[in-house]
Amino acid sequence: MENINEKISVLVCFGDGEKLRPYRFKWGGRVFNIKDVTYSWIDTLGSAKIYHFAVTDGNTVFELGFNSLSMDWRLERTDV
Amino acid sequence: MSKVTTIILVDMDAFFASVEQQCNPRLRGRPIGVIGSDKRTVITAASYEAKALGIKTGMNKFEAKRLCPDIILVVGNNHKYTHTCSELTMLYAKYTPDVEVYSIDEAFLDITDTSHLFGGAMALGGQLKSEIKKSFGINASVGISHNKLMAKLASDISKPDGLLYIRAEDASKVLEDMPPDKLWGIGRGIGNKLRLMGITTCGQLGRTSGTFLQSHFGIIGERLKEMGQGIGSSSLSTEPLQARSIGHSMTLPKDIINMKLIEAYILKLSEMVARRARKYGLLGEVISVVIRYKSFKTFSRQKKIKTNTSNTRLIYDTAIGIIKGIRLAEPVRLLGVTLSGLIEDPGQMSIFNEYQKKDALIKSMDSINDKYGEFTVSWASYHNIRKHLGVISPAWRPSGLRRTDV
Image 1 (cartoon, rainbow over the protein chains, first blue to last red):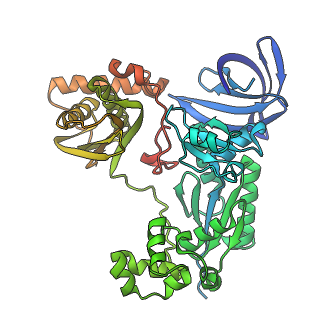
Image 2 (tube, chains in turn yellow, green):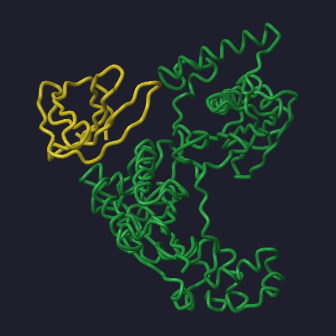
Image 3 (cartoon, chains in turn blue, purple):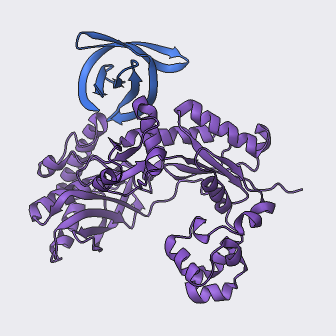
């Protein structure tokens, strides 16, 4: 997995069975449709909670992170 | 009629490796080894596919590659595992309030008073396994019995992805031909010694005279006999353990002898220890330093100071004082700092202006680090070593003082 750590825009749904689920994100001008959220976990950065999601578009695995304080999404890592 | 005590041991199968395989579908069904990020890392967990090829926890990555050139080495992410352990603990609480988190991947549950609500012990065990699989996508082995020793054995026998109930009346039959070192608490050393004495099964161990065993093993002799008979404790430590010390250690990226570098690591470790003490409102009066040489020779020295403290600088000064009193015989591989003799911080302010200023500085640093994350503000002298990633200590627990940052 390669560290990326870039801000991205993400289409998400709150409160649909899972509390928070990403569906689609845009990175480097390309749109990736998330087929499966394979794992999720939470950690903290100071007073911010970071919600992490391991996701796949069917070909590639990505790790996305949502910062609850700054309310931004980052593409943290990928195996591209 | 009195209820039969029923204990479950839930043991996650190849925990770290299973989590990584669940995260990345490409890793599923393949031999993988989870490693740390340091150069001198070892395999911290191997998938079942890797275990089948001889890969074992603790092997260094070069040994692993030599044995299995196709092994995929994945740098572990401790946050995934500690978070999953915390979530699992909440899941267990749905089945019983009596839960002892024994380690990051094992927990004992006393289901004596709750199993009937789920259709009995086996049904509860099955339900628990399915819920873990559904929530996390990973497998657990579940052992059920009348005490912790036998529940652990049941779980070990049933691995991987197993579910086994050893009823009290069946215990002696199960144990009769079982090698003693399969029991939790009997290591290879004791197992070998027993073998040399002609005791090769738990059945034989249980029939051996306690006095004879005591003459060879000392105080634990009688306990070994009981273990051979399947007798063990069923009481769970459900309350967070009162910590008697706070310690951190790190294996250094390379062996060092340079005092400036040693000072930088000791300052970082002192800050980690002091910060955790302050977070939980504790002070300590005994500071210990542990040193491991290149040759793996390990020793510790300690000093009692005149005051109880959680002040980084005071802990550091004491630790460095200890190290300067030692003539280092070899390059250092590992350093550790521990604070013990703990008491609760009464919150008493110092009457001396100099200490008030230092305390105020530390408070300010803590509040910045609380808000923006650990080591956002830190001492300049360890700036260049701040990216060291922690490991999950065996003492890690999902709550209380033992919930360390990883």
